Image 1 (cartoon, rainbow, N blue to C red):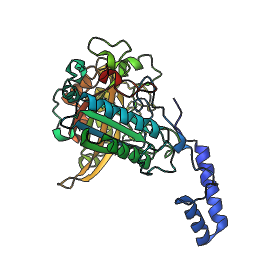
Image 2 (image 1 turned 30 degrees about the vertical axis):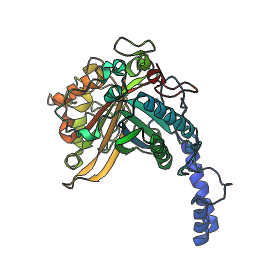
Image 3 (image 1 turned 45 degrees about the vertical axis):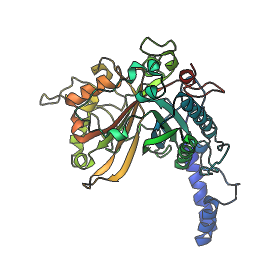
Image 4 (image 1 turned 90 degrees about the vertical axis):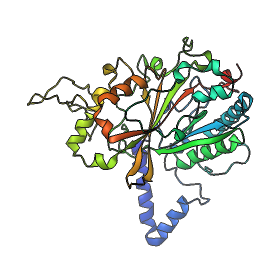
Length: 417
């Protein structure tokens, strides 16, 4: 996998060169010259600011992009329902069109017809487009016998406050990029290619910290200010593929068309930020079980240091409280259950009550939600200290097939099998 980290030396060198140029030009004239060169002028002789826009992710492959791809700074999650009268034939044609558009845009090329030029002058910027099928898709296309058991509805959880109009859906699309215009360009292009075959069910927009914003590569922070994603499974681990992807020879519970695929659980989780921000840093750290500054466990060390669950303080209390989020969500506290978390933050302004409508677009990937997300969420639901500061407001589960072969499209094995 390509390294998407920007060289700090290169960034500082570029910044220094820019500063010298402005100083030599002097005053308003120097500012005007610099502004004209960075606002869409025709001068193409300048030194590139970064290599960020040139990063490209391949569309074709064993797995779809956007699963193990490093998380991007901008994301769109969109669900569609097939229109009345649309069935298997129309769905296949739609996925064929969508795949063709995604392939071109991920390579930094414009859409072949009616391109909007929104992302003109930008490179691929690590754009990924990922497609999945919801539970209802199979009934609408007459493919009920091909519906995976893993798409059964999730159980209810006490922290759920679900808006059913903004969950589920026949088709799910995840778009990610390290440039907002590139991401929107892909969103708009896919919307236009939808035509009369499907209609929008819901859309959610998210963001993360931009690559290169920190002095060194770091695990991202969420809107609570907490480092989020420390214990994610890593591709270098022996059991990574087993946890995240359906095996090539799918088990009885998974139809053959899901080989190499994965299951995405998507939850919009609102953070009760007014309540959270009213806590002291010490109280916040006790809720999470980790230091806020660097993500290290309360028992000491660095972010990746093993947590000492039995360590006690001078008074005899556990250093990491029994209901701390990091303790309860550990795989070894949940029968080995694990999932690859790949979220975006979101901010939709204020609620009618004047409270922040902001939080996490939680996306997790696993070979089977009943062995990944569900046991962990059940455990959290019974006693996680974080639960009083969050609300799960939307939910969806999607079967994400393996990647498309060259010349093919995503879902072809299902729709033409």
